[in-house]
Length: 228
Image (tube, rainbow, N blue to C red; front, top):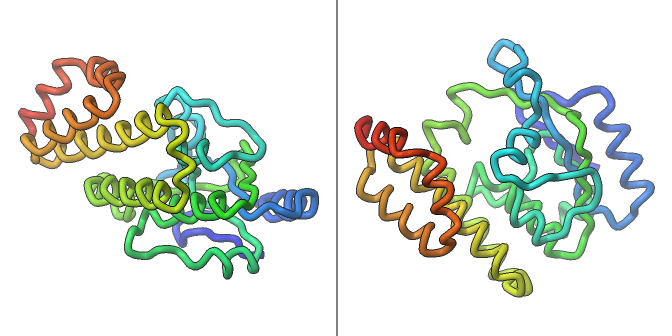
């Protein structure tokens, strides 16, 4: 069994025991994932102790609970990386992390495990600590590159598993959401025209993204443009 953790993150003492019990109970499990408490550079707890999945679920309006998650469900809502655990045989069969799309290689790995027919088990408990700091590869400074690599991971999953296309509403919503994330990142970084172009693509893909634009509000959009 292989458990992954970045050098600036940490596993809690009950992580390994919890993961091992799941693999014993469900032999076809190919990946164990869990929630994470978010901490700052000095170990301080951020967001009043609200976990990564709590924050993401609220933002995306997609609840996530303990149990096995389908490929389409993972496509729609990814996991946080700290605590990813796989049997060695599964990791060798699926293949290593795709470094060309780092830091979205963990998302790509979970999609590949699920797409290969293995169970992906998510434990909705914070069994790890995820550290936030300005130098991390998936941080704000690298957000445009991260968003583009997220798009690559999503399109690669569709190529490997065309059965995902059966539920076109989920696919359109997820791709549009990813485009919207890229659009906002581009505008924050000063790519005003390109950002608005990507925003329009997101709305064309899924008109419901207009509600997200409305939620941002005119003032916030103007601030993004003014700061560009």
